[in-house]
Amino acid sequence: MKLYVKLLAATAMTMTMATAASAEKWDMPMAYPATNYHSENGAAFAKCVTDGTSGNLEIVTHPGGSLFSGNDIKRAVQTGQAQIGERLLSAHANENPLFGVDSIPFLATSFEDSDKLWTAAKDSVAGALDEQNLVLVYSVMWPPQGFYFKKEVNSAADMSGIKFRAYNAATARIAELAGMTPVQIEAAELSQALATGVAEAFISSGSTGVDSKVWESLTHFYDVQAWLPRNSIFVNKDSFNALDDATKATIMECGAKAAADGEAKAQSLTAEYLKTLADNGMQVQGPSDQLKSDLQGFGATMTEEWLESAGDTGKTIVDAYKAM
Image (cartoon, rainbow, N blue to C red; front, top):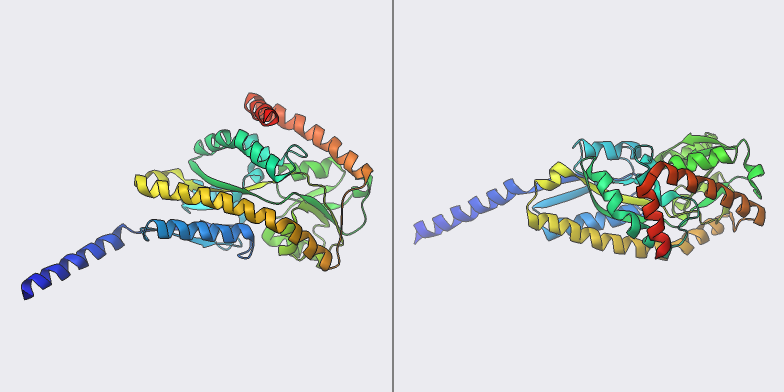
């Protein structure tokens, strides 16, 4: 009997050691603060995968650019320095214009339209990522984008000469069209850039404004609802292909849940963010007729430029979106 018990114990220990040996840990760099809803949603996704695989695949998030800066995350995942990561893909539209489909000004300006545009574009974006050794898992939009300034702005002429924080090709192009000077600044460095005058204005969602406490440096927010850019979560393809089918399925199932949860959170927080800006002394308002007209002109120009750069694939996406 004692021998039998010893054999059972040895078998249990062997199984435990085998499970521990097969368990895998993935690091997931993220660019935004831990308190940002994208980061919180990413943490929930990571827990979903860890729990869903009974700990055989543990995903650990690293928010706030603590592991890799925002600009370095995509390359880190492509090259296997990190197995999974989150990135604002439009920041890489210079690599492939399809990555900037969510940042075409005034094309998709509501949550509903953002979903339609993503439905039309998702497969093409996933294909472009696949060519770069990446597997798309899920994507979540930011709230509609608006302009932050430290003065009243009623037309494009009022923007001339302003140092404008750019986070992707679209924001840099808007700066150029308005006669502003684009300055590339990641979200983690935004507060300091505003405080020191390196940047004097930017376009983003209410979320970024609250995260960065922009009321400490700026005074006006114009809710122009230019577009709803997306953060995307992707996995190194080699790491993904090395997983068993059940683990792959768990990642994708948790990703689908995170996409739905993230969008619901973005919608619920949109008005709350703008209220927080106003409660902290910022003037929150819509654009003047002249500013709206000027911006729509920029949007028309940038849409044509994007369609030219994205070719037939881009035209197919926009046509499919408009037909929905």
